[in-house]
Length: 129
Length: 85
Length: 167
Image 1 (cartoon, chains in turn purple, blue, yellow):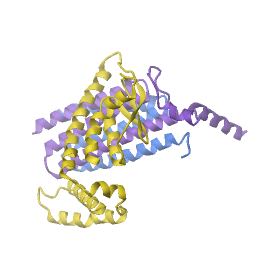
Image 2: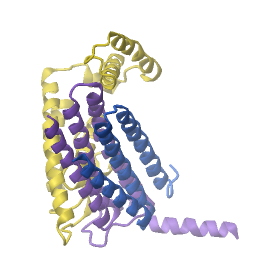
Image 3: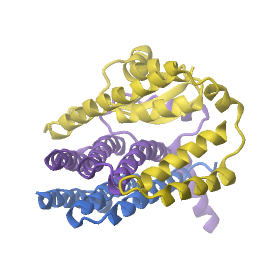
Image 4: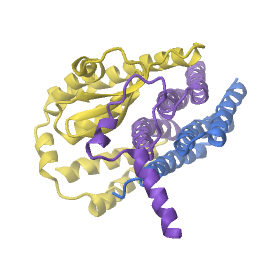
């Protein structure tokens, strides 16, 4: 049982490392978010599952199972919130991107993000003067 | 064997911290902070095996909770820059 | 109905947190029964229409589909990880990213939340926003330009099962 658990933990750590390399290599926020969220979620879950395999049904083992469920539920939710936040902050997609259908949402209301922000900034400056 | 795992996890944390320091835009840094939180949960859970103390899993649980709340708060902050909702 | 389900859920979480069976501790089991009442009284409101409607007819079929959903999700997660791993390691970065719209036919908000989280965990896709029937998805490798094909490719495999569970 011990060696099976150690192997599962090893696979998880390999995925964790791969996710963090993806965080460095990809060109824009959204791609980084994709790579890192997927790899690190599965990596951490399998570390915790390995601990459950080693410890069995003891207080520590079931607690690890609970943490694993929690990470599996919250991590995609956090990634979704961050992607939305990054888009509304005004981060453009990478120049090699194929298409962006989300920008239609903002054009309908005659709000272009960059224009809005620059106007806001100039207003502030005007106020100071 | 587990000692080698710690080295790999340490490298992952270092890569995340590099992205926090380097990231050209604020959302980049926020993403790195979120990922660092999840990596630390695994780090802290692995301590249970080496020290044989169940205590560290409690830390992992509360860290996961706090990291999630922090991520949501940062995402709201990023959104609030443009639209007052 | 709402309160009973919440009470059972909280009690199960209590049991997982302090596993009192391995050296059997009866006092822990009993304390859990009392403590689980507190959040139910404080935070759980009376059952709304939508929730009670879907949970009033708990059939065995729907529970079976819900259990079937778990291995499908895990299989897709592992495929997703190898897909992303290939993109990270290969030196010329084979990505064609972009944001596409897809349609959903699910009605209840719970089913939609589960669908969005599943989309985030599966190969090369990340939910950005949801507006009524349209989900905006960031796709790392766009292979088609028509919306229907994209819908079938991204959401098709989950929607079939979720429809059977929730409707």
